[in-house]
Length: 246
Image (cartoon, rainbow, N blue to C red; front, side, top):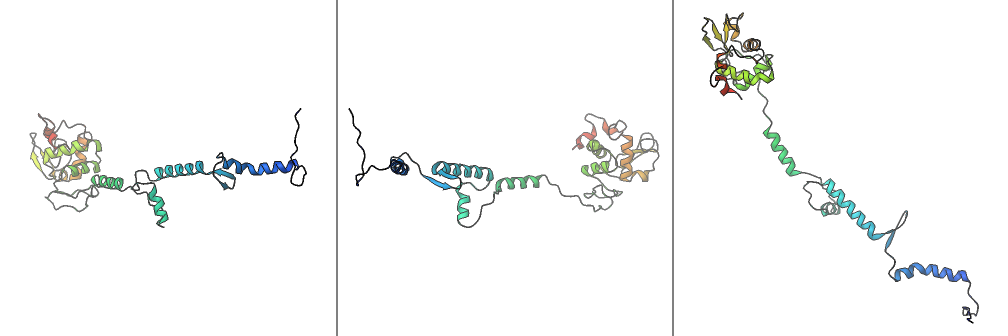
């Protein structure tokens, strides 16, 4: 028959069971660590946290922030913001020098200078007419200025290019140009309006030499630039106006 031996202390007495349990519980964490089953941790306000997983999480969060904040910027390395902070320079700005330079070049390429409002001397090429003032009589207009005159006189923007080409074919852009018409009348001005019997009927030669008046009559006579059948330069093979189209 088996026998049970009591554990006695140095004084010959059996130790209390609760004392033994307390000693085992106190030694538990130390024993676990010494056996390699524990892990390093640090204290947080909500309790103990494992050091390695938290460290990896923080590194991953930083890299994600860096990738978003400095995307396509001049800051190339994740260590750059850290170095900047450690040297007291603060976080580097997320500048995009290459992209900004490209945008600046594109803006410059598509930006046009504002036209001047100074009138050119009578009889000279006008590079200043912008439609904000009355077109001077005797001015020779280029294609862009004829388009502006057409629109400012009430014409459609959609027919301005064709109207300008028609005027260049008819008068070379000379607002005081005149020529004889087979019906015995006189073709006058930018769009060579025939008076007294054609598209310029009801207007004098001097009135039709005024660029704005000429444009307004041409707008009405061509159904706002959609019907040029009364103009000889609308015909031909190819039509004379075609080479002036922008």
